Image (cartoon, rainbow, N blue to C red; front, side, top):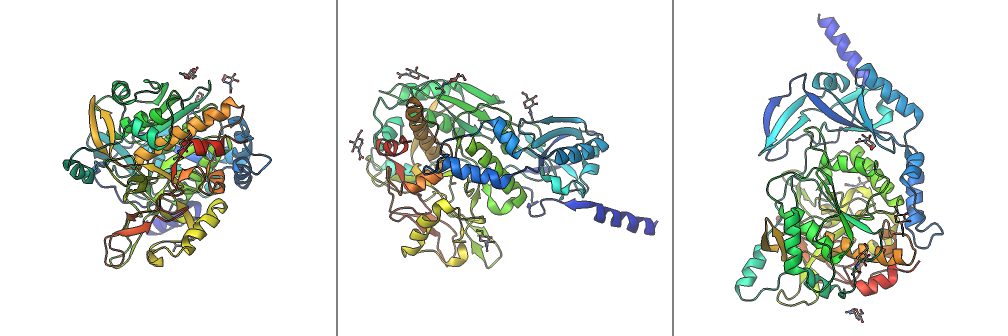
Length: 558
Ligand SMILES: *[C@@H]1O[C@H](CO)[C@@H](O)[C@H](O)[C@H]1NC(C)=O
Ligand SMILES: *[C@@H]1O[C@H](CO)[C@@H](O)[C@H](O)[C@H]1NC(C)=O
Ligand SMILES: *[C@@H]1O[C@H](CO)[C@@H](O)[C@H](O)[C@H]1NC(C)=O
Ligand SMILES: *[C@@H]1O[C@H](CO)[C@@H](O)[C@H](O)[C@H]1NC(C)=O
Ligand SMILES: *[C@@H]1O[C@H](CO)[C@@H](O)[C@H](O)[C@H]1NC(C)=O
């Protein structure tokens, strides 16, 4: 018996490879373990098949996003993306045979053929992925099925898969959107301004006629936490706050399942503000795609984009997780998905996060800053936050101390930002100690907007003092949509992946934010301070905040 056991262990070691060994396994805060899932229950897993020509995809993205290239704006259709990066026939065959040999036959694919989503019993899943052991977790009324241990795959398929989704990753910590108590305290002194659509339109220099008019323009917000927007809140918000300019009061299309129950502050905020700057532009909401206990909602949204040949031009997303908690295989693959969107002419805007530079207590003695992903991806446009210098007036903007920013520890600095970031580092700002960040990484955010003291209508009640980069991101999204609109009217293509062009502007068309620092580790060395804003680009507010007519003048050319 003993000999046999050793024999089987050897076979196991030889024939299977572990994937995503760098994915952290700890159960996220708030989830309560409910026990092992019974072998006959169904799980739905997502197989990320190895893509082809990723180097060419990257080159293509650089060409179509660089305003100085002949190829600028020559975007690909989803079908063309599919022929470029779709998995090889061998990859498809090997993965299919592997699944079939375990009796897994119920699979859906996407137009680009690089994802398979398959349902199977837990028993089958645990044999297919040696090491995996599925457990159920609960948080309030939400349940989740995940493996408590790393998984392996047969070594024949290792080189044909990036990862298997729905096994390890928990949804990121739900950070209740912040209500700014500083704002509340300030307002006690007397009249308080509070940000509404008209405040934003005044500050960013939008006239009442700066609204969308092009027939095919569209924008979207995507939400993955168990949050819903209510159409009645949007309508009330618009009637209370959106005066003087033409706007829509309804969402054009909801993709995914809108749950019942109470509206979420975050969900209301995103929709209400993208439709206030991007006024009269058709707006979609992607909501919680992936309701199955084993799915990863963010990943499901990426699958959806690869399965729809026509999607909105601008997407704004307030979602992120600690970069150090995610496997590099997963993050690199998500980057490929962002590149696929970019070559199609789609702009992806992510909130930079609400924890400043962040803090990772790496060991008892060592703290370092903590970048957030996808904010740290080189292939998205990341939006930071500001507040008014004088909270009682529409004045110039300074850093909002919560504004997420810093340097990736995983992704090298992309070429488009090298000179801007070098200039910042050389400008002798009072930098935090070198040991806290990696100055060779992708630096973010790319630009910013107001993120403090917003009015939001949720559950039919107007609520003040709502703050966070989840407010600034849809504001910038709506403004980019207005610029797309003017481009479409001139017969030009959409802006697509903005960063290469944004960095070439060197700040033209943006209000530079030069005051204030954001927060970081509360320890003796840095005492809660991360980076500080400075002239030109900085890792707190990027290039600054939009001055619409000036930015439009630059971006509506060619
Ligand atoms: C992708 O779209 C096709 C056609 O609409 C559908 O049959 C398929 O199930 C979709 N794939 C996934 C993973 O949902
Ligand atoms: C605001 O836009 C107008 C044109 O619409 C321009 O004349 C003015 O200079 C802009 N204001 C600022 C501060 O750039
Ligand atoms: C709003 O946009 C539509 C196109 O979606 C356009 O036909 C209409 O004229 C716009 N409204 C105004 C007031 O410009
Ligand atoms: C708008 O969309 C329709 C149908 O999808 C298409 O035929 C038309 O060419 C598009 N117009 C523009 C200006 O892109
Ligand atoms: C710094 O970032 C680079 C990528 O830009 C990475 O290769 C390197 O491992 C990082 N160093 C640390 C200490 O995280």
